Image (tube, rainbow, N blue to C red; front, side, top):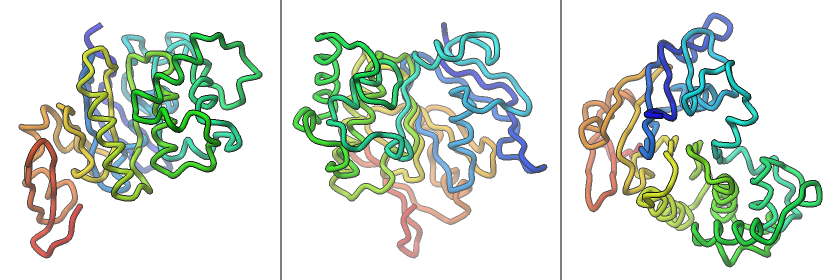
Length: 266
C-alpha cells in the first residue's frame, strides 16, 4: 500500500455551499503532514471525509487502500487513531488516565468494565503515556488534569492499537504556552520514531508545526492552495495568500514563526 489517504476530486456541498471543492490529496506511509489554514478553510471537514465519518458529495476516498463504502468501516477505523480538542467532551471525567488510554483498544468511551483487558493491555497503556511524557498521569482522575495533560492522554489512547494512521485535529487548542510546547515536543518525538504511524496534524498556526513534519497541505475557502514538502511549499507568499494578510515567515532551529509587518502573528 503506497498511500494511507487518497482523495481524488473530493467535494462536500451543504445548502448549496462548497465546504470542500475538488480536493486532491495523497498521504504516503510514514509521512508526517500538517494541514494549515484559517478558520472556515475546510480542515476539519476534510479530516472527517478522510477518516470516513463524512461521505463526500463528489469524488473518491480511499483510506488505508480501501475505497469508502467498499469495506467494513468499523474494521478500518480500528486502524486509524484520532485525537482532538472536542474528544475530551466524550470522556468520563471520573476515570483515571490509564483507564481512558486502555479503552482505546476497543475505541470505547465507557469504563474498562465493559470489555476484557489483560495485563499486557494495561502495560501497553502505561507505556503509551510514557511515550508522550505522561507516565506520572496514569492514576490521576481525568477531570483533574490540565488541558495539555488531557491531550497527551487522548493521544496515548489513540495509539493504543498501533494505528497505521494518526489524525490530530487542532490538538493544541486551548493550551497555554508551556502545555503547547510540551505537546509539540511529544509530537516531534513521535514524528522521529521510524516505527510510528503516518500522522496528519491540523493547525491554524505555523508556530505549532513540530520538528520532523515533512509535508504540508494549505487550504483556503475549501480548496487546496498549495501542497507538498514543507520546505518547498511553506513560503511567505503561500502563507500570505492563505491567510489573506501580508506575512513574514521565519524558520529557525526546525521551528517556524510568522508575523505581519504590524506585529500580528498567525
